Amino acid sequence: MIHYQLHCAGAHEFDGWFKDSDAFERQAKRGLISCPVCSGTKVERALMAPGIPRKGRVKPVETMPVPEPAKPAAGGVIPDAVRAALGKLRAEVEKSCDYVGNDFAEEARRIHHGEAPPRGIYGESSDEEAEALADEGIDIARIPWVPRTDS
Image 1 (cartoon, helix red, strand yellow):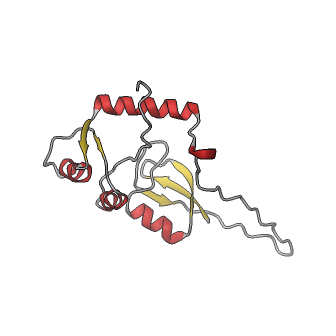
Image 2 (cartoon, helix red, strand yellow):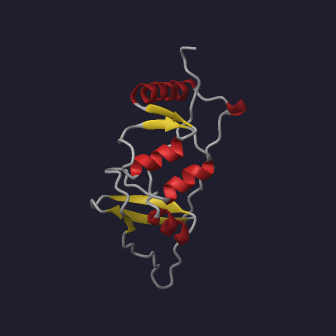
């Protein structure tokens, strides 16, 4: 893992951890890194001073544990507070956006290219379709869909 001090076009500074420098470059080029303050995706590495020890003194290496990927709780159970928040999010998406089913990727492209009216949509897409949309510069969000609480 490599740690970078980053800054966006709006001059906000923040940290980022990446597998290696190539991973940063790929993600930045695709606009997958966003500023936590303004959500801007024009992100660059800031100048960082290297940690050079004084002559004769060895600087101890500081290590930071790398977090494990998020895993569901035992048995795949989602904590009640998270389930409630996801339920509220689902209700808001269903109320405010158009359901386009399996045509999600196609409709997202149509909206992006101005061939369909701009609006919020939701539906299904495969991992490959979602990655292709990201490669084309089309911003989407994948949200865990929990069953409705009113059913």
